[in-house]
Image (cartoon, rainbow, N blue to C red; front, side):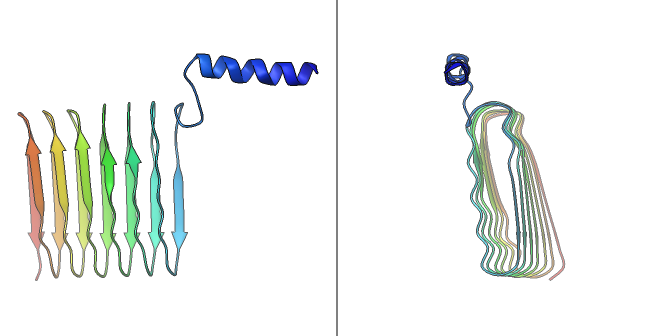
Length: 167
Protein backbone atom coordinates (compact mmCIF):
# COMPACT_ATOMS: atom_id res chain seq x y z
CA UNK A 1 0.00 0.00 0.00
CA UNK A 2 2.84 2.41 0.82
CA UNK A 3 4.47 1.67 -2.53
CA UNK A 4 1.18 2.40 -4.35
CA UNK A 5 0.72 5.73 -2.52
CA UNK A 6 4.31 6.74 -3.19
CA UNK A 7 3.95 5.95 -6.89
CA UNK A 8 0.59 7.71 -7.12
CA UNK A 9 1.87 10.83 -5.38
CA UNK A 10 4.98 10.90 -7.58
CA UNK A 11 2.85 10.72 -10.73
CA UNK A 12 0.52 13.39 -9.37
CA UNK A 13 3.50 15.65 -8.61
CA UNK A 14 4.85 15.21 -12.14
CA UNK A 15 1.51 16.09 -13.69
CA UNK A 16 1.14 19.08 -11.40
CA UNK A 17 4.56 20.30 -12.48
CA UNK A 18 3.55 19.86 -16.11
CA UNK A 19 6.16 17.19 -16.73
CA UNK A 20 5.03 14.17 -18.65
CA UNK A 21 6.81 11.63 -20.80
CA UNK A 22 6.23 13.79 -23.85
CA UNK A 23 7.44 16.97 -22.25
CA UNK A 24 10.49 16.89 -20.05
CA UNK A 25 14.18 16.69 -20.83
CA UNK A 26 13.28 14.99 -24.13
CA UNK A 27 15.83 13.24 -26.29
CA UNK A 28 15.38 10.54 -28.88
CA UNK A 29 17.46 8.53 -31.28
CA UNK A 30 16.52 6.24 -34.13
CA UNK A 31 19.17 4.09 -35.79
CA UNK A 32 18.32 1.94 -38.77
CA UNK A 33 20.47 -0.24 -40.95
CA UNK A 34 19.54 -1.87 -44.22
CA UNK A 35 16.34 -2.90 -46.01
CA UNK A 36 13.05 -1.02 -46.05
CA UNK A 37 13.69 1.60 -43.33
CA UNK A 38 11.28 4.33 -42.22
CA UNK A 39 11.58 6.15 -38.93
CA UNK A 40 9.18 8.67 -37.42
CA UNK A 41 9.83 10.77 -34.44
CA UNK A 42 7.63 13.21 -32.56
CA UNK A 43 8.34 15.30 -29.50
CA UNK A 44 6.41 18.03 -27.76
CA UNK A 45 7.70 20.51 -25.20
CA UNK A 46 10.90 21.45 -23.39
CA UNK A 47 14.50 20.57 -24.09
CA UNK A 48 14.03 18.34 -27.17
CA UNK A 49 17.00 16.93 -29.15
CA UNK A 50 17.14 14.07 -31.59
CA UNK A 51 19.03 11.94 -34.03
CA UNK A 52 17.85 9.78 -36.89
CA UNK A 53 20.50 7.71 -38.67
CA UNK A 54 19.51 5.51 -41.57
CA UNK A 55 21.82 3.32 -43.60
CA UNK A 56 20.90 1.78 -46.93
CA UNK A 57 17.79 0.71 -48.87
CA UNK A 58 14.23 2.11 -48.59
CA UNK A 59 14.92 5.03 -46.22
CA UNK A 60 12.43 7.77 -45.23
CA UNK A 61 12.55 9.60 -41.99
CA UNK A 62 10.36 12.21 -40.49
CA UNK A 63 10.54 14.21 -37.33
CA UNK A 64 8.39 16.79 -35.65
CA UNK A 65 9.41 18.77 -32.63
CA UNK A 66 7.42 21.51 -31.00
CA UNK A 67 8.32 23.83 -28.13
CA UNK A 68 11.55 24.96 -26.49
CA UNK A 69 15.18 24.25 -27.31
CA UNK A 70 14.82 21.82 -30.23
CA UNK A 71 17.65 20.26 -32.23
CA UNK A 72 17.52 17.55 -34.82
CA UNK A 73 20.11 15.71 -36.84
CA UNK A 74 19.15 13.36 -39.65
CA UNK A 75 21.56 11.33 -41.70
CA UNK A 76 20.70 9.04 -44.56
CA UNK A 77 23.30 7.04 -46.39
CA UNK A 78 22.42 5.25 -49.60
CA UNK A 79 19.38 4.27 -51.65
CA UNK A 80 15.95 5.88 -51.87
CA UNK A 81 16.35 8.57 -49.13
CA UNK A 82 13.86 11.29 -48.15
CA UNK A 83 13.68 13.20 -44.89
CA UNK A 84 11.50 15.83 -43.38
CA UNK A 85 11.97 17.93 -40.29
CA UNK A 86 9.29 20.17 -38.84
CA UNK A 87 10.15 22.31 -35.86
CA UNK A 88 8.06 24.97 -34.19
CA UNK A 89 8.89 27.37 -31.42
CA UNK A 90 12.10 28.43 -29.67
CA UNK A 91 15.73 27.67 -30.57
CA UNK A 92 15.16 25.47 -33.60
CA UNK A 93 18.21 23.86 -35.15
CA UNK A 94 18.11 21.21 -37.85
CA UNK A 95 20.75 19.43 -39.90
CA UNK A 96 20.06 16.88 -42.62
CA UNK A 97 22.76 14.96 -44.45
CA UNK A 98 22.08 12.65 -47.38
CA UNK A 99 24.46 10.68 -49.51
CA UNK A 100 23.66 8.61 -52.57
CA UNK A 101 20.55 7.79 -54.62
CA UNK A 102 17.25 9.59 -54.94
CA UNK A 103 17.65 12.05 -52.04
CA UNK A 104 15.16 14.76 -51.10
CA UNK A 105 14.91 16.70 -47.86
CA UNK A 106 12.75 19.39 -46.37
CA UNK A 107 13.06 21.50 -43.27
CA UNK A 108 10.27 23.69 -42.02
CA UNK A 109 10.91 25.85 -38.99
CA UNK A 110 8.82 28.50 -37.31
CA UNK A 111 9.88 31.17 -34.86
CA UNK A 112 13.03 33.20 -34.96
CA UNK A 113 16.75 32.58 -34.90
CA UNK A 114 16.25 29.22 -36.60
CA UNK A 115 19.22 27.45 -38.12
CA UNK A 116 18.96 24.93 -40.92
CA UNK A 117 21.57 22.98 -42.83
CA UNK A 118 21.09 20.47 -45.63
CA UNK A 119 23.95 18.65 -47.35
CA UNK A 120 23.32 16.28 -50.22
CA UNK A 121 26.03 14.39 -52.04
CA UNK A 122 25.39 12.36 -55.16
CA UNK A 123 22.34 11.44 -57.27
CA UNK A 124 18.95 13.06 -57.70
CA UNK A 125 18.95 15.74 -54.94
CA UNK A 126 16.20 18.16 -54.11
CA UNK A 127 16.08 20.25 -50.97
CA UNK A 128 13.62 22.67 -49.50
CA UNK A 129 13.93 24.90 -46.48
CA UNK A 130 11.11 27.09 -45.22
CA UNK A 131 11.79 29.32 -42.26
CA UNK A 132 9.38 31.83 -40.79
CA UNK A 133 10.25 34.61 -38.39
CA UNK A 134 13.34 36.75 -38.13
CA UNK A 135 17.09 36.21 -37.88
CA UNK A 136 16.98 32.78 -39.49
CA UNK A 137 20.00 31.16 -41.11
CA UNK A 138 19.94 28.54 -43.83
CA UNK A 139 22.62 26.71 -45.80
CA UNK A 140 22.17 24.08 -48.50
CA UNK A 141 25.02 22.25 -50.19
CA UNK A 142 24.45 19.92 -53.12
CA UNK A 143 27.24 18.12 -54.96
CA UNK A 144 26.97 15.93 -58.06
CA UNK A 145 23.92 14.92 -60.13
CA UNK A 146 20.28 16.14 -59.96
CA UNK A 147 20.39 19.16 -57.62
CA UNK A 148 17.64 21.75 -57.08
CA UNK A 149 17.14 23.82 -53.98
CA UNK A 150 14.35 26.00 -52.75
CA UNK A 151 14.74 28.21 -49.71
CA UNK A 152 11.91 30.46 -48.57
CA UNK A 153 12.43 32.75 -45.62
CA UNK A 154 9.79 35.11 -44.33
CA UNK A 155 10.64 37.89 -41.92
CA UNK A 156 13.67 40.15 -41.58
CA UNK A 157 17.36 39.66 -40.85
CA UNK A 158 17.40 36.26 -42.54
CA UNK A 159 20.46 34.78 -44.28
CA UNK A 160 20.57 32.00 -46.82
CA UNK A 161 23.35 30.32 -48.76
CA UNK A 162 23.02 27.70 -51.48
CA UNK A 163 26.09 26.02 -52.92
CA UNK A 164 25.82 23.62 -55.83
CA UNK A 165 28.61 21.87 -57.64
CA UNK A 166 29.21 18.96 -59.94
CA UNK A 167 26.92 17.78 -62.68
